[in-house]
Image (cartoon, rainbow, N blue to C red):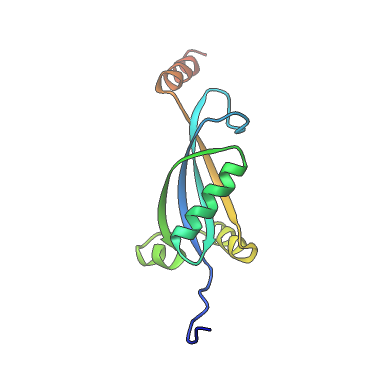
Length: 123
């Protein structure tokens, strides 16, 4: 039995996950993928990333890339302005030891976006 081990506490990490398309992913018709802003619990960022990717795959999403933005404390130290709503979601992720998808921004093909904006101008 090892002695002197300290219990590693859960922290919340802000992650930006890019996803591609897959069957039954629930993304809007015509989207080529999406960016998801997530708050994920973990004893370190690697664990938070693993948990987030696993949960997104269970939700039929296809994670392609994950960018980490650190913990609340790290983000504050970098001068990020973090509104109360965002802090509340982070606290919920910590309380529930879970992953919270705070925002999803679908990506569309440039040609599709150009066609959409053109039709908006003519109507």
